[in-house]
Image (cartoon, rainbow, N blue to C red; front, side, top):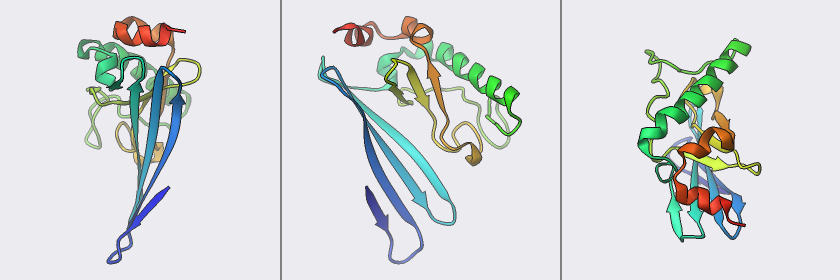
Length: 160
């Protein structure tokens, strides 16, 4: 845990890390950066190493950009279901004056795989909704994302 403060102001930055996955095939490190001044802002960054091939892996390595829309539609459906179930939940599923829609998953999109093999897409605070939504996460089951995944990554997870 690292804290950085500036002696000429009231702001500080906290940086923490957590190992999410550490196997002989895959390594994921999560960084949490919290900036505090008049208000606070939290951001996550995930780093992945495919130990089978010895390479760093980004979201753009998992999926071809032409498949981002299919992944996005699954996430959008989850957002809309959450908003329908709870009036306090707000996501910017369409372009608004306050924020952008979720369109445009990028090659550097935050993600990780949970212990059940689900792909978890993580957004930073204010990225897809107001700050009150925090850092939303959306789980995709293997049957929802595997068909779009780069075959060499499927191979990494398929090896025992």
